[in-house]
Every structure is written in structure tokens, then in C-alpha cells.
Image 1 (cartoon, rainbow, N blue to C red):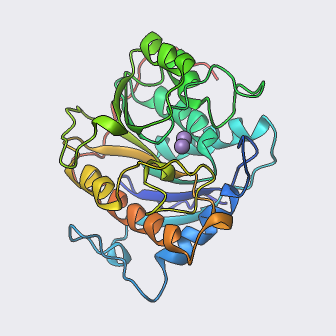
Image 2: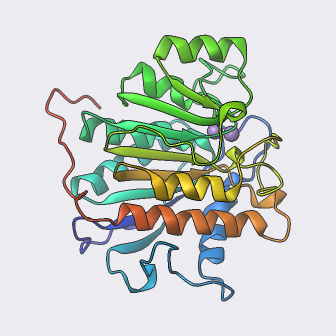
Length: 287
Ligand code: MN
Ligand code: MN
């Protein structure tokens, strides 16, 4: 993927991250970015978000293709560098995973750019393991790494329904605010202050709505619940990822269409005015 030279500030860049090396149970999420783009441009739908914006007519909506990753630990640095480059141009990144391991390197770039960042994490799983199957970069671990490095000031998780004692202890240790699926009610409003980074794991949905995920976890949110959350967020979304869609498990491309729908509604929120200028983190940067 080449970063085009003509990206104007405030652009929402759709970046495919076809990477699933750190999936624990089943691979396949690396196939997702291409399939989500296919669903997005499928003749059965259009590019208008429900709230109005026509992404097809919006010059600041840009699809940049897929990152070319070498694999291994180097991929973490590659993802972070590209996102940092885009943020330096005041572009907002909407990344298409891949599995949830992509969120840690993305937030390394965001954490250096924003000194106050709220992360809203929608998922069946808290992904807070200190390590999983001897892998600290597993898709089961990103939010432990993110909180250890203080890349977010607040982490708010919604839809969780697989807490283990270890992860409960981790949530407490890091001060994570958790709205478990059993406590979730449609219309629940979250008190969030911007800027917000949204990390959307497709398995937050009940498998009835999204069978194309590696970890089927019954008792989840509906597609409309998630759309309502995105549309009703009281704060600007400065970055987002859409992860864990696994096309090899999908049924009739249903989950691909749901992912494309989420992409449209999230991008529409990210294009809203008044979000162009990030708070630049002033401090000593390490890389
Ligand atoms: Mn996850
Ligand atoms: Mn999950």
C-alpha cells in the first residue's frame, strides 16, 4: 500500500490489515479486508450512511488498500509506522482487520498523537490476558499491552461475556470500565468524552447476526444495538478498527454485509466536522 500524497486533513482512510498470525483458535481473519470492500461495493446496497452522508460522493473518504506485511514481530512496527504517518497528516484511520492483535500497534501510534484518548471496545471478550498460549501479542492480549503502556486514558468495554478470573483481575488492575453483555440494554448511553477510538470486534454481535467470526459466543448484541451505539456516541471518533471478521466461517456473506454497514456508519461519524485537529501529545517520544 502506498500512502497517496494528496490526502487532505480530515480524510478518513480505510486501511486493510490482513494479519491473523496471532489468532489463537482459528485463522481466516486475514481474508476479511478484501471481503469487506467487496460487500461495501456490492450492487445490492449503496454507499450512503443511515445518517445521511454519501461516502461515494465524499472526497475525504479514501480506500487505501491493504498493508503489505512481512509477518512476525516486524509486522507490529510496520502497522504502527503507517498509522503514525497517516496521523501526522491529520488523517483518521479506520482499519479493517485482521484479528484483534492489530489494535495494539495502531494504538501505539494513536497514543503518541493524543494525550487524552478514550478507547471504546466492543467485544464478547475482554482481550486482557497478560499472555495467551505463551504469546503476549496474541489477539487475546492487546488491551493488556495498551493499558500497560498507558496508550489510553480510559478503556470502556461493552458486550463482554467471557470474563475469566484472571481477566477480571486485569480489568480491575487497569481500571477498565466494563459493561458486560448481561448488563447491556438497548439504548444504554455511555458517558464518554472525546476523542474516542472505537475498536469493534465483530464477535460482540450475537452469532445469529454475525456467524462469520472465529469465536461463536452466544448471548451478544444485535446489529441495531451496535449501530445505535455508533450513531449515538456523544464524542468524536478519531480512529477505529473493525476486526475478527472471518470470511471462512461466514454464511451467505451475511457477516461481510454487516461489517460493510458498520464501516459506513463509523466512517460517517469520523467525517463529522470539528474533529480535524488532534491534541498533539507533548513529551518525550520513544519508538
Ligand atoms: Mn477481540
Ligand atoms: Mn472477541
